[in-house]
Image (cartoon, rainbow over all chains, first blue to last red):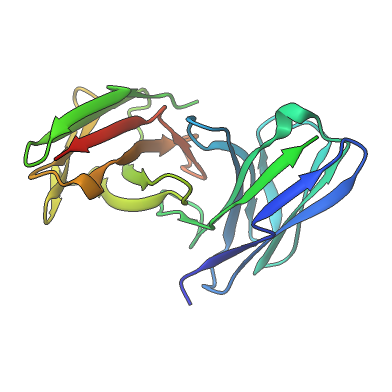
Length: 113
Length: 113
């Protein structure tokens, strides 16, 4: 299995809602990532987990809360988002997390109303 | 931290022509240089990568060249086809440990037949 699976594919939420994005990989990769991508822009790094520990937080607002329950799963909990947070949220994984190929999921298209 | 600059932002070619996209990086310790292709509505996919111990790598119509002295690496696509139309991103390491990738701003390639 060489896939990174993200759910849901689409999500619409209000500014007072709480929702979660989920990401799963079964390649035995030990590094997992969240990227945010706005239309016509590059993916922008948000968080990095290495061996299930948060290793990088790129100054992301606290309304985004990552979680890595085990080596195969990565969640992104969303609370009190703003309309400008609407974007494609991409999960990725890599084998060891150093100078390696990233495998991307197909993303969750998020709209905040 | 690392900085990756990509040029041009848009590139239009006729089918059969060659296309070249260039990226420059700032950290001389960088040793992994990937290129990703993203079609509309899809995830970024690695198309080719190169490590600092080689100067060029080819895969059919796609090649990447690396000039470590000048700190730039380039994507070359020969005999372009309409299905090569997409956004192409180069990437570089976020930090000296290479624990995450950051992306250039992207090049929108249009191949007309």
